[in-house]
Picture 1 (cartoon, helix red, strand yellow):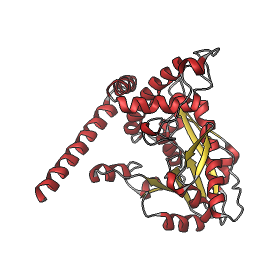
Picture 2 (cartoon, helix red, strand yellow):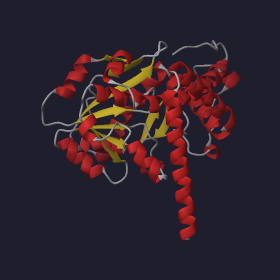
Picture 3 (cartoon, one colour):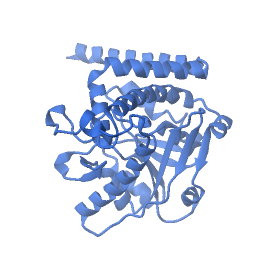
Length: 328
């Protein structure tokens, strides 16, 4: 048993070193070359990971199958893999951006909602984000604006990579103002932070457990939602402010602070968790319709296994009379 544990740790550490080597390569290459390499790696992933490719195609079909043709869905799936390759490059390069580079690269919109985060008061702020666009650049935006925030990060099985990702904001809280916390067992502490008037940032579009019975209407189909994010906002008595960032064609990024989400509460816990989760997903759907190729479609949002599939209109059924070049 001890030998097996040592072997697993050795593999984990080797993967950690490999990631650090990749970081050096992506960081030192000229930007255009690094981004081209990222797109290429995304195209390779589309070819060599058929299960993930099927998941992306399935998700896009559920979301857009009644509006767009199969041609559009396949093309968008390929672009979404390229987007993932670009995200990988950005993840490593953003860590080295200076304040000047952030000022030149990030276009910030939504002055009034942004001002809300600067107002003193008794309410904490939930900075609502999702796996859409360039969420790492959203973190860079927070850093650039000198916001002090608590960030929930999903850990990995690899302890070396988990520690590395937890420190991705910089050399520590003193420098960046961003404190990272694991996504497990931290709900009570996060609620305490919010009630103390602090800010909490999280990616709230993660798939929920269907057995808990919290479902939302997402692109016209029921999807299980992870109610913990709604619970944090409700129990933390927080104001909710959406922030999304997406990539522009000229190499810059647009970070948009949306209008505050007014939570619709009734006092019925299950109903409130469902309603607030739906409010969040309404925003997420708006973002994905804006730039569907920059969505994170890898994980099955609606169904966990292909064997549970129900018929979904695709191809000829959903594309009759539709332009393959349909835009959203």
